[in-house]
Structure formats: C-alpha cells, structure tokens
Length: 212
Image (cartoon, rainbow, N blue to C red; front, side, top):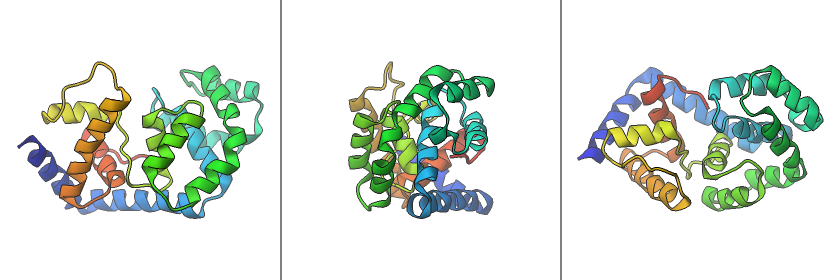
C-alpha cells in the first residue's frame, strides 16, 4: 500500500506540465553533457559532485560556475582558498580530492561517453575516485546521463521513511544502499520512468525545486 501511495503521488507530479517540463529539460541537459560535453565539462561535473557531499547543492552550483576550469588549472592551495572564500564547509579536503582526481581526467571522460552500465561504472568510480562513495558516484553518473543508478541522500531516506517504505538506517552501508535502490527501482518501474527522472520528482516533492 505504501508503495502504491508513493507511485500515485509521483504520477500526479508527472501530470503537472510545469514540473514535467522542468524534469525533462534537466534530463536532456544531463544527456547532452555526457554525450556531447567536453572532458573539461565532465571533470567539472565530477568536481561539483565531490563539493556537494554534506553540502548544499545550490551553493555547490554557485561554486562550480565561479571556478570553471579552475578545477583543472588551479593549484591545490589556490583551489582551497577559493572554496574557503566561497563558504565551503570542507575546503581543504575537497580541494585535495579534486586535485588527486586529475590524473583520471581522460579515463573518466572516455568511460562516460562509452555506452554501458551505470552500476558497473559506479563500482569503478567508488574504487578509483577520491571523495566518491555510492551516493556521490551515482550523483555524477545521473548528471552525465545515466538512468540506472539512484542517488540516496537524507532527502530520499526521509521521504521513503515518511511513506513507510523503510526505517531510517543508523548508517548507510553498501548493502543497505543497494536494498533502498531496489525499492526505488520498483517505484520507477511502476511509473515507467528511469531512476534519473524519479530522483528529480522525489527531490521536487521534498524541496519544491529541480536542481541537479
């Protein structure tokens, strides 16, 4: 019953033209970035997803716009100073992660542009990219056009708990992450949309916004 209730509430959102158009526009932007974007743009998106871990998505977007190619060009000290100036909570560690990921620049770009499983690529990203766990890797993959991974953050956990689909976990282990992802897959399948679209609709339900 709880699953049915969430499915119906998301369906009602898909029937609101202004919300559906926002979601569809954002999804097209993600796909365009992944397939047609430059490697610089893809690395910038990877860096953005590192910045938003335990931080505001809106502030992360503002920082990404301000820094631009600096994610690739700045020294670690310069990047740290820029992040601190713009109010990031963890400027030192995030700057360190971004700089350490630069040697992976070409490989990440190549893998993103190659058709394949988001889940398989997510496992590789979690093992090789500094600052990435399942959530951050899923966020990045969604933002470059993959539709088969779920971004499970506190917004999603709170929403699923509110519908009685899960109990809030004390910690989000890999096993628990995959279990919750399967619930979201069931919801998406019932509605006939991808996990990428479902995340945007659920985010809108919680915040009234469609970000990235």
